[in-house]
Image (spheres, each protein chain N blue to C red):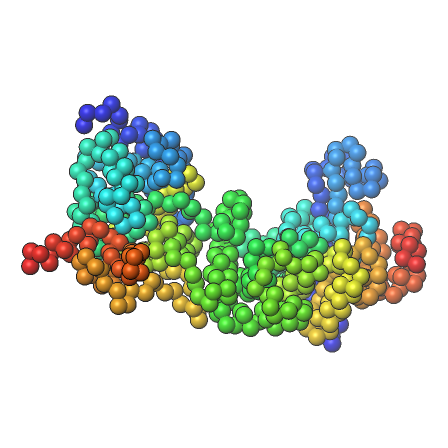
Length: 281
Length: 279
């Protein structure tokens, strides 16, 4: 490492503050812990919450992976990787299985996470009740009272307007039957992966100054009504045009000339793995 | 109907803004109306006590600033009371003072046993959610998680208050004042609460809409046998609806009794003036 920065960019006191609040978040699953969000060399809203978690937790033996909407090589992921690399010198990877810390913008990787891994999610809007209550003071009281009818009301409104629970991402979840949590804008497809996951899932919102967590093996349920159960995106009959995978989360690509619609794995590293396996077989 | 059955007992409710000083704590005659000129404390409600019976409409009348609205807001937990107690026989056998329970339990009471219609619909409704969702909110809060059922109940209530079918998915922000007030009433009724508070429901509505809303309230009382506390500065409204009436002045009840009696034979000077101004 040749840069003049402290290991992991932050001074040790800052790291300690973030770690302390992370511990509190892990102790109260789903509860949003306020923390002293630091200034970062990237703009707020571009993953500063996630980065602060990553940089406070990372050590020399970690192997780091960053994803931006499923891909390892898009702008946000590349820049975050560069910053982490420059200030820590840790090994990078695109392999989900190999990574010990995975920072992700809005996806949980297709490959199953394992015990010992940490998934850090970047969160733009941590408050699931913000649509119904604009005052932070009041939403804190609602959380304290376990008064979550507002979160259900948003879903109810969608059902009476559109006949189903529309909205592709950030479908609210109930963590350990206590706190309703916004799972960062991951697609509904990823919601079931939160439940009973073996890895530690941390969520950080830098602009909103909140850290929250889903510890390993925690019960996480997506909110739904008795007669309108929670449903994930329909993957029936769709296959990846590159690797042939089924039952994964797809990107939809339309050929503008012919109007033909293709589907392609959203998780690029998993797609690459599938292709390599096929070719070596 | 058994008019003898108590549904709520309220005793000595006091709400003051400010701590009070040596001068005004003991001797209330130093107050200017309800205001202490020495320590600037406002005594909004002073020692208010009464019983509410099943199926009756109790009117509270008084001039602007007499503490009527503050009082019902205290009973609906929108404001903390300074002292006093209220008991509901239907809650914990009437042994627990509902004003001193935890905020979770207060939410339970609001969601299951009470309804409130505010003077200002912005306080009672979520203006950016459809009329249907507004009625649904209380049902969801009370633990109903069945869309079909919630829709059914909401539609029935919106039928009662005459909101046209094609407007039910619209937001109350786009409604007229009278319609907003009717949606509020439907919302307050959604859990079939035994007690309903109505704070100046018809104030600011034009006369024909006022008559509609008043008819509606009377009908609801007759059909659903809900006990109501109606706050109004308008004696006409009280005359039409209330069985019994309390007259408030400067935070105190100065006269109470059957509505007819109070209107025909007022005892206190203020009440006489009030009744006289009606004629």
